[in-house]
Length: 221
Image (cartoon, rainbow, N blue to C red):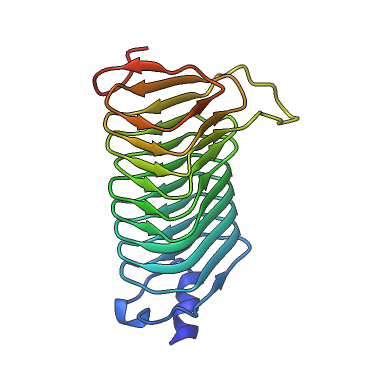
C-alpha cells in the first residue's frame, strides 16, 4: 500500500482516504515536481526542491519543506513545521502548526483560527494573521506585518536590519496591530518602520519605533 501511495504521489494523483490512513512513516522526497496530499490523509515528511506542496483539508504531516515553491494547507490540516526558501506559505482556517513556520523569500498568511505553536519568520515578504495565534513570536527583515483583528502573538515581534547584498530597499516595513489584537513580549525594531497600533489592541514594550494610534478596522494612512 505504501508503494502504491508513493507512486500515485509521484504522478501527482490522489487515492482514497483509506489508502493514506495511518501512514505517518510515509516520507515523500522529490527533486523536481510538486506534492499533493489528499484530504484526511496521514503522511510523514514531505520534501521537494523544485515544486510546490499542498496539504489537503484535515490531513496530517510531520513536515513540509521546499526550496523553489510555495506551501499551501487547506482547512484543518496539522503539520509539525513548514519551510520554504523561494515561495509563499498559506495556512488555511483552523489548521495547526505544532512547531515553526519559516520562509526566506516569500509571504506567510495565516487564516482564521490558525494556531502556530512556535515562531513564524521570513526575510522578505509580508506576514499576515487573520484572527490567528502565533506562540513563538514573529520575525522579519523587509516584510510588512499585519496582526489582524483578534489575533494573538506571544514572544513579541522583531524586525531586523536588512543586510541583503543584492539590493538596496528604501521601503519602510508597515507594521499593523489590529483591533483587539494582542502582542505579548517586546516589539523590537532594528530598522525604520511605520508602526500602527489600534487603540483597542494590547501590546508589550516597544523599542525602536513610535506607534501611530488608529481607530476603526485599519489605519487610514
